Image (cartoon, rainbow, N blue to C red; front, side, top):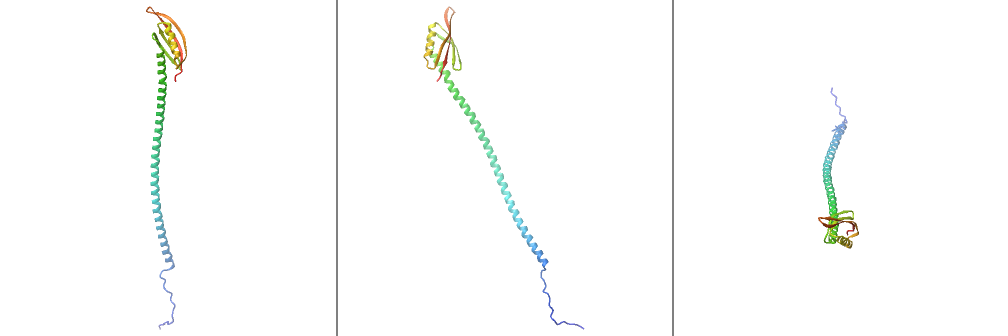
Length: 182
């Protein structure tokens, strides 16, 4: 015989997704979100690295340019020093040039007719002159003229001697003075 149960039986509702499946789906979604976040983070970091490398290259280029400018400035400074030294030498030569010219001018204006200068030696500010004259009075006049010059001091006759050349009496003289200059 067949038995039929007419009593209500409670059936469990069917589970669409079991708990384990829910956890797997949740984990998968979390994994996808984390991977997307990591991809976004990696992309931003790559952009930042590229930007920083560009800034580094630009900074290195500026440093190289500034090093070149620094070298040029050093070269210009060295050239400026050389030019300044040359200008100083030229100024010194101009200043010293006036001294010998003034000395020779003072001696030539003091030189009377009949007196010749054979040698003029300058050491420091002392000047020695050797020469010849036709008579002793011309040598004395030469010394007096030298003493009258404002550029010359301490004019002294060191030696005078008489000799004959081709039957003519000639007086050789040596004198010394101090050149003051200006």
